[in-house]
Length: 530
Image 1 (cartoon, rainbow, N blue to C red):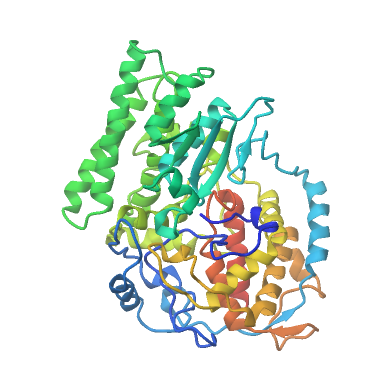
Image 2: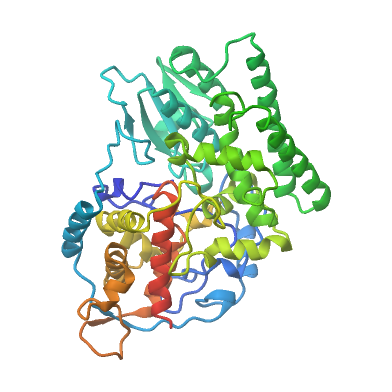
């Protein structure tokens, strides 16, 4: 979406330097009583409004739609759960310094046995810009994909390249809903569509064409059956089924009309997918993992997230589609898929600006409340294949906390500046308001937000309980005993909420680490408003 946490270590801060930014059409910024410049700047929780609006397919975010959003949000000011007014207290600047936290990162890395990422030859990683897979050969493929890992068509090509271990380079480009395309990219493809592959001096668009060319030019590790075989005939039929599923999904997700008939059509499509998955002994669509699984994966993932959020309909984990459950578990065991996989929250808020809007029904409201932060309270519930959001690889909380803390420490300058947008000026809205590159940070509260983020990083690295047992470094509000300079609570609360609600999966972190970061940001927000 924008430069990632890792790339921002050395990158200068730019308008597109957003770190955590799943999009939503449900929460515009509202008036901030402490911002010195802006009429529209404070963070507002998702509980205020979960009905997605209709948006244009391209271009800017029109004033009429933005005005409609502001009407739906209602009263001004900072709110908490169920719209309750929140008044944050000043807190003490007692967290370790960033240099002390850097030393703690190195110490914990050894204790936990965590190795640095090998972005060129190691496991798939959203931060990679070049993949060689340890091969000493010229790189002939350059893939242009979206910054945020929102684009399902980019995801297909990404997985294929990783499965076939084709050396390639990556350049990340904005989707239209969260910023302008680079002029250099538009020279390559004036329509600006993603993905694009540069190969043998040609710019190739459309994922289907790209994937066919890659299969032909790199026949090793074939992902399609041979032409003229029964398996290829079956694959062709399954590709048509995938398009039928897409139509049934969009028909229900994006429409406010004929909900029951749309639901039945979607259920019928999913039942056919489940039946086809049960036709072999393999958990996959064919006897072995294939291009069919790659083509289905982005949309089954997005269907699961969006239909759960907007319709309250659970695709996974309830035995409704047992073969789809089995397929997800098999896919999540593949490093090539799990590295590209997003989460419910990111998809729920990234899809509306891409699809032109998603329609909420009453059955979705309580589910959406859980996805929009209800599951982020500290301490977190376990994450596994049976959890509210199924994630069959499971978690390792000490390692997940460490990875989140490490990323925060490494990128504190950019993260702090980005969080300060929450109490700054919103700027001209775009189609994806939570990914607005035009927002302007309010540097007046830099020291306060910096102090809070040091508390968050410290808690991630050693655990909340251990941190709070340390008299010198415990988080405490002003009025309790002990030293530490007082830091402003209200702008910090807003800035941390702004940051928390923009943690993107997989762009910033995998789900286990992302939920730890969200939870620890929620912990400090709760602590200064208790």
